[in-house]
Image (cartoon, rainbow, N blue to C red; front, side, top):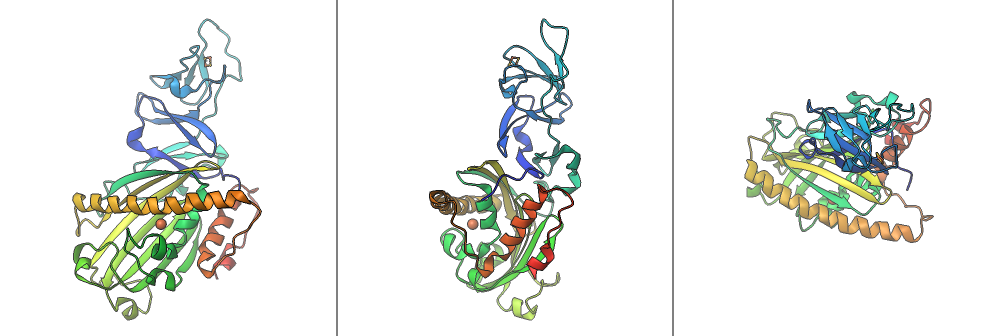
Length: 355
Ligand code: FES
Ligand SMILES: [Fe+2]
């Protein structure tokens, strides 16, 4: 367990949660206020007035500024104080921290580290909810646990066989083989076939088959964004494809996509945002909603396990995990995470960890 990594883009919420009414969020332990200016542009500031530390989230948006509603200091969207009622002189230090913030694919992303290093090109490529290829519905969940436990959970899907036997109907085929791993500049790609297993979810044409082969491929991007494509094929397809990525001409019985984002609120609190749904040629909004209802059940299964795991860990924080071969992607990803907050010339040998 470690400190919270700062040099990353964290999801602060869904785009529709923010308006000209200030919203409070906590990310990696920092209180933040988010609001939209008169032009609809999102702003993210430290949620702590320089005067007497009242939260600006109890303030009032005025055009492109926010006014603290304790004694009326006004700050522009860059965090600079522009007005102190009854006082002409505005001291130089009268400013609150401004956080780089970007709205992309229906999520609001905030950079929590060194602003000089905030590169929007590094924001994970999650699916927008109006992506024509997918029909997506959304949900979110709070965990009383450190965010790395949720990351670890998503980086090792062998747990489906045990944690999600009820919700997803996953069987032990999910724990029998290991994925192919590829180290990406900002994460890990994990791909594999699950052979001869019940279709999860058992929808579309896949519902007509008792056993199928499932191709799963996901990118897990800093600081915890999970982008998973799942395609269900007739049994025997994995073998026909020599366990390689299926060629695009093969008939897919059912496919779906999910984007999920893990946000560290504080050391022991995490927020989790997700969307999921079928390919637009294979399902509709009603099906997407049914899928998200199953996902909610599944993520609550994860929550029970992870929060209980956190309690055990807290009884003795000196005890170290004993990795299995399924933990390779966790090791790679954790190393990549640490690297973000190290001095920039630090070089880790991530490639060798993947081999
Ligand atoms: S605490 Fe904000 S104006 Fe006094
Ligand atoms: Fe899970």
